[in-house]
Image (cartoon, rainbow over all chains, first blue to last red; front, side, top):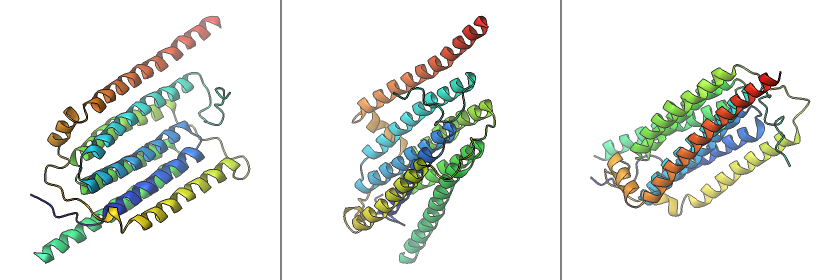
Length: 107
Length: 187
């Protein structure tokens, strides 16, 4: 069965939501100092990009965007794995959970 | 017939408005809560409303994977680590907003203005013409066939990325344990 186009809002509205999500996530990454909340804001940024990819896939009518969204999901899962490993390592060494205080790697 | 079509249209608009509002509101909540536990709970709401938006874009498999992978696996890991680390408050603000905060708010404002301008210019152009798709678009079988034919390399690279991340997580955990034992021995 062929759907004649799309019902409801056009793709542009979804891309708008995606952009606002990305902006909110970027604000969180830059403003917050708890690494856990920085990671959560990073997830929001990745999800904004995912929503844009899927909206463009629907607009173009081909599957590359959805495949790429699934790859982004895998990258997000890896990022959470390594990021939370770092947070646990910081906690074990009794370092402060504050991304501004953790500047030892700065050159 | 026309009445039924317009009723469906209104329904899709209503679902879009509620899911989009929930998505943006929970995003703001994630960034603004001071307790990371509440932030993580708000992110679950964000992921759920995003899955609804994916369904509206006829990406059924991605919506299901979103709920399973994110709300199922990733958020459980987040909540576990937040419970393990314990409730630690963020160090309080020293004085007024620093230059970092001002710069971040300016950058986010610039992104928002850019989105509105770009989409406003593009709304009447190529984005307003959406291709029609058939019923298999976004179904698991269709995604699987794409993964194993056109996008096989991406599929394999994804598995390597996940493996490397898992090895990295294990090494991060083990290294600090050994260091702690060494410190205790020295003391």
